[in-house]
Length: 570
Image (cartoon, rainbow, N blue to C red; front, top):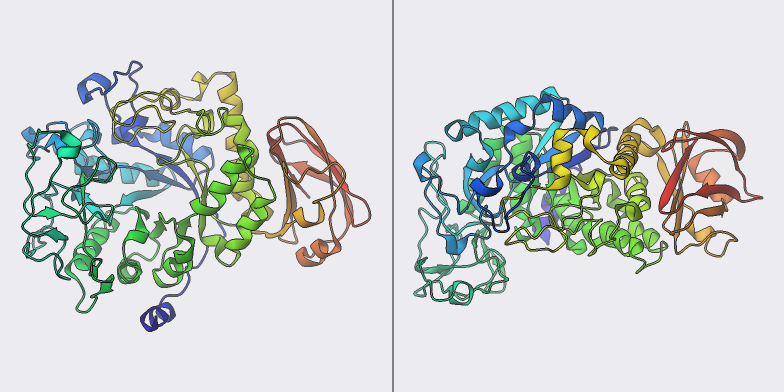
């Protein structure tokens, strides 16, 4: 506890720019693929694969013109795969420890190399990556890539690491279950047993067994474990009371910090850090401070699911932003699915009010089920009010997953991933919505074009409206819980204001049009520094204007279509 307090004093909060970050997440392996027919469990030759070069100036311009500030390219670093690249000097992976034909982008095989799947000229893959960085920046976008700190592929081996850097595990004492200077955890004198996963194949040998990525300290991982990965050792002895051994600095800290610096030096603008909470916060304090010393504008985003650790990973670890999954995402999903009341949104933001600007909002990413899938809403339009709330609730960044903006449902039976409402990360596959976006928005059908226009309006509003970009918030739910013509279970309302511009945001989660009456208390006018007034207000999504009366003596009246929202500014 004393150590954490001391570290907290040493790490100031990140200074927030007035520009709000808007992120477009893409999986290049799938995005550029123009193949229209897919074969279940298809190979690279059968189903094709997108390339870094598919993100040319025209496609990047579309993403920039939609209003995004950043693009997160998922799965750039070389990972284990069933595709044979031995002709290019890349060791072939044993298929027993690869999930799917393409392999998981989160089972890193060489931290210092680019995935050969993504290169047109495999021998020139690092130069193609550098050109991607240059094109992204030329388009006016900043670039985020994955950093996977908790685990690596079973057959990890770097053949591209800089001279003088030793490979992970190269100097480990494998006779010890734990040593602070080992890079991995071991199960001495016991081989790895994959019988429960691969039957009696037993073509993969590992002696002694190393601990699986999801903290399975057993030589017998199960099919639902991260058996294709091995856990990295940051100096935490999990089997002895989780005791920590951080002095001297563990070898893994040095190696992983070097990897961050390697990619930062190539001009990338941010890291999305996979399962960041499975790595001790003290490492993040060390590594992030070191990277920002040389590259102060690099952004760090943590995938984290434990609310009790949020403030620790911001104030001590130094993260700029955290996933708002166990919070806003879960709440909005439950409201869209009519499993929860819209009043839950108020309780949700109040739980992180002191760190709200550090939370990353989203409704989809590669881990979550697609909105349009029957596993979530079954119809992309049902989540439009949730999109508006997510984008306008506060000053936090907002992320959209490629295909979300035209209603991708993720329902292909791709192979390893199966038909689960998610877009696969393990398979070679062509995604219908990605293929349309790759060709151009003129190929969208009427419903897709309408959805795309709504998303484009919202993403642009985030930074074009002063009130939405940086205004203070006043939640109106507490004075409307029993108001006439206001259903607090299917309606959410709030005000955002800078004093110069004010926005009234009202979201209708119901499946019918609503004529809504909203009470506005005197406290709202006092807190936001505005006066009761009647003015012409512009509705930012539609572009239409209407007369809006705001006072404390009569309710403000608005009409909202089913599954929609209004953002009225004055």
